[in-house]
Image (tube, rainbow, N blue to C red; front, side, top):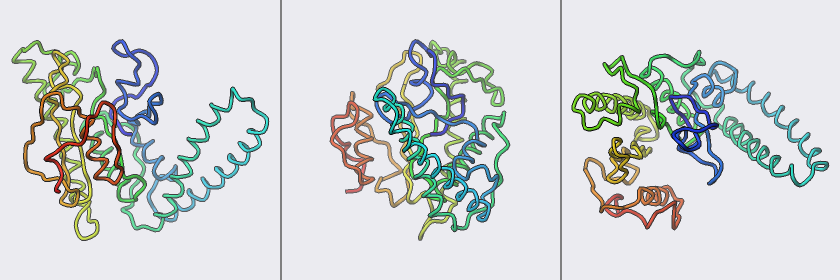
Length: 298
């Protein structure tokens, strides 16, 4: 779960909890997964605090993490014997987090011998938007290379974002600008912001295309979705959402075309269709009404 802007899950944002504006991933209907916007922290999640992707350094870090985790698990088993039922739910959540860490360590062990480009740990959050986005996408691609994850989310901007983009000639804050009131000047500046964001996405597409994988490249085996939850930000209109699916030849998606679906078709129908393609068939997701036609090669 990656992002560019701060990721607070607390407080009120636009009249609702900040969890709805600052993340698009949820562990459960009531548990949000916060985004991480610090490249240094992302690197540490992938490779620990070793500061490098060097194999020997990574292996030493894996062994240290495994030792710490074994010690914590032992202490928790003792704790389970003495706590009451009211504390058990909190402990279960903590155990879920530990199991996630254990899964990451196991994956790291499995890929520790894989040859990777030697990459040093980033210093922190770049002040330049494009530099920040590209650094995060480099780490995303590196995570795919190491097979530490196969699914990611990336928020190019949070809801109700106050960020300005003076580097492209847009001094306005993003959210107020999105309520353009059909002003031609504001629409032109908003178009610049949208185009700027899409240019960063194009960088990721090109990055994956340049990474060899199997008998092709990583993009051949990857399905990327770029989109938004609102089609007209001025009126908060959320029909006719502009969604781009970008995938290589092995994803089963027929590219190079524009497909328009009937009005009121839920976006969740796309997730049902994609999950089925990934080998995770489900009957419903959110407000879905069924899979989409005209999308997959069948």
